[in-house]
Length: 505
Image (cartoon, rainbow, N blue to C red; front, side, top):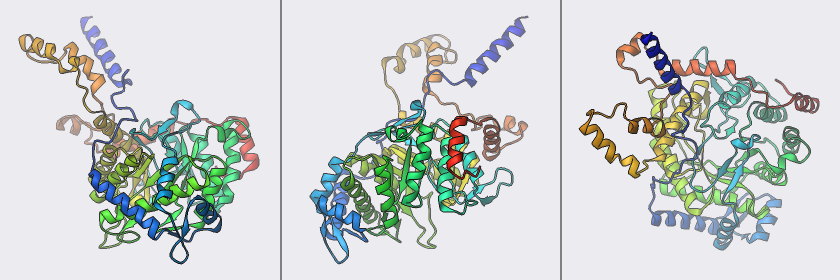
């Protein structure tokens, strides 16, 4: 009888440990800014060079409609075919720009505040290949994959917003692709979501779908739960007309946006890191000037994403130390300007879920978080230099982000935590801290316990099948996909959407 009681007590303790702790030791939204790769004089020099580039070279290939708005805001003709931006014009745009805003979820509890010093991990990417759960090899990404990735991440606490991570290569028509991508997002998650629009004329019809999901005509614009990813600047220093048209449409429909600069060091921007940062900053400021010339204060994530290529081969290198330091520096500069910062990290070049995968993701994502990137894109599931995406990667990265948030949380130094009395009691009593009230209090409050990482000693690991992280994550991903089938659209909303649009799933 006593033995049964002992086993029952052990089961209760194990169940308690398996349950979510009452106090989450590492929630999203921790404070960043501890890592500062640049000194203040260095930031000032980079910023000054960026302003000189804009007032000397300005921007080329400016669409006529945008040129009129920029000239009205203070731009002037510069070298042939270009508009230049006086320093005061750029500085005025920074002052007027939105400094904080809400990325709404359709579930208000899942909304996040962007700006300040809070760090959130999310997704990005347009992977054309998916790492197949069964074969362990890459194949073209499909619309079914996008639905599966969306409902998988819906269960992951550290994906604060979901940007479509893959392109449905089995949907050839661009309008059908944009529609079905948006549908996959709103059907399978109530987190903030993001997508891109191939053409400006696709925006209004998709907003009609978003209104249906939001509850009625113009309901989406009141609390927009989808943001647009747009790259209106083409490096070096010119606008892209199609993307600029999308910007106008998104502003008209109150769709917040990430204006992404994705220059490549040594190809479309200088190979020197300082020169790269100066040009990339100038280009992202050109997006900010554009948005605020159209509508001052409109919500825009200042998404300055430094990309690295291997200068020996020209191949994109997303997992490099240079990627880590440049994106950290970008976050630092953007935060210095007081703008909502977006950077891209965790873009491993590894194809398999292996040591290269873990090392590159860990180094780059931790650097971006410590530097205070408000929104860290590409940070979940991406592989193969953004060409691939992995179900196993999503669940492994979610656990990695918990460790990162725990590192950002730091150490709380209080009289209780210093433990003077606990040390005295243990030294004069049991001689250890196991089982003490002080230890029990700290156990769930201060420590994160991974669900996937193996902490067993070698013999136990061998006796349990000597499983690697890839196998463990594959099982977890399969279990989520088998059991999690959310219904975030009512039957009436489904019917209305399907009556208007060609939904292919």
